[in-house]
Length: 528
Figure 1 (tube, rainbow, N blue to C red):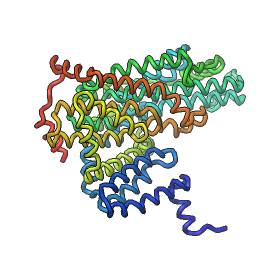
Figure 2 (cartoon, rainbow, N blue to C red; figure 1 turned 135 degrees about the horizontal axis):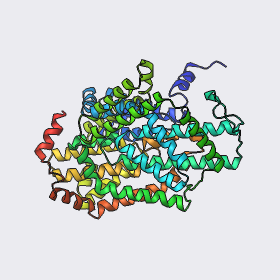
Figure 3 (spheres, rainbow, N blue to C red; figure 1 turned 30 degrees about the vertical axis):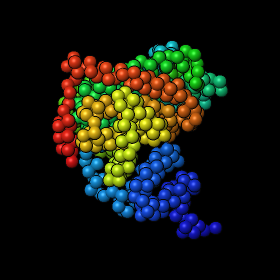
Figure 4 (cartoon, rainbow, N blue to C red; figure 1 turned 120 degrees about the vertical axis):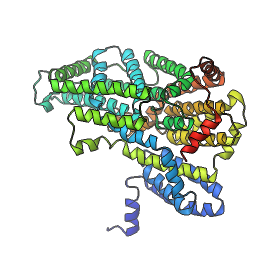
């Protein structure tokens, strides 16, 4: 039977999303204008809850479309204005440049990263050691690079190895696609296949947590870090030092957790790489090394040199983060012969959808500011004193980041704390400590679900996830020990006063200098 126009509309609207989800979004769009007419404050909070719902349901539909529709409607009915949305985007231009240029820049360094992770798997036989290497390497890279790109590289390694295994298991030669011959024609049984899947699941989860451990440490580790650093007027080194009383103990605890889950084979960890699979991967790696030309080697050298420049440029703050990412694109492509426009375009595919979603974040933030939605919550939290105030902010950010995107949560809270500073409700030193609590609260507990961490969501929605049987529930279960440990250690570092004491020590030792309220006001107002 031919479909009616109404049926065609429902079918086309939000594509392959479930019908109930489509109806829910349409209901939101109908409800919001009515609520805004009756009570703007209530309507604003309903919009925020609806937007968080679209983030939580990211596996059903990418949040850009439903969230974008809600944001457009909010502007149309008067919850905020186009000028306020533009202002929020302008104030966070450096974050947008980070996503556009830095992610694309690291795309052109993938060969080097692939080379490094491949060697880890093939050269180190101990599963525990490999797990710690993957977790720590992902943490280090995510402190300077984009977590999505780091995960993308590790996924590419796993997909490549799985494809090699599949060819051999199917009775084919792994080098057939390279037009070479090889005398191996092994077959793997089902037990070996399951063990290999478990091995890849373990490494990918360790790496995913590693991106959170490293991403919280520096201002370029996560997009919200850069937003917080910009509002606080912190440079790269100062950001890392201020976070260190929380991030250093958390990193150590994270590594010990990695060691424990592998040692005791709990929460789905401890899967070993079968000997037959290891031999196949080693043969493949040797084949790649033997066929690597001097031109290929030169590309790796160029990427390594550019990587050194990237780290130095960020650490010394030689330019804004986005501009350093642009230099990475130019240097890698110029010296490695990538000059075709279409080849350049592929590098931007990963970043631009999330960049567009970030612009929608800022539209919702504009609604929150114009309607004063978080003011009562912030006033309640600021009613606490001392370490308890920091604990409340940490927990509030943690709980919301577990079910919603941590970039959105961090942006909302730092804006509200900034407003409290400008209104004279808190001192500059309080603001700095609260910024640390907000940053760590949004980054660490968000590993609980794929909703909070973009890197986890990217892994879950990748083509590899079904191949290695990595479901939403399994990911939450495997992340659980990390969630508990990282959250508790971060909370203890704040609640016991360790953060305050270490910050005071940095002041006394002249490692850090006090920022004046006048300076903070000038910096913040300059963005306006």
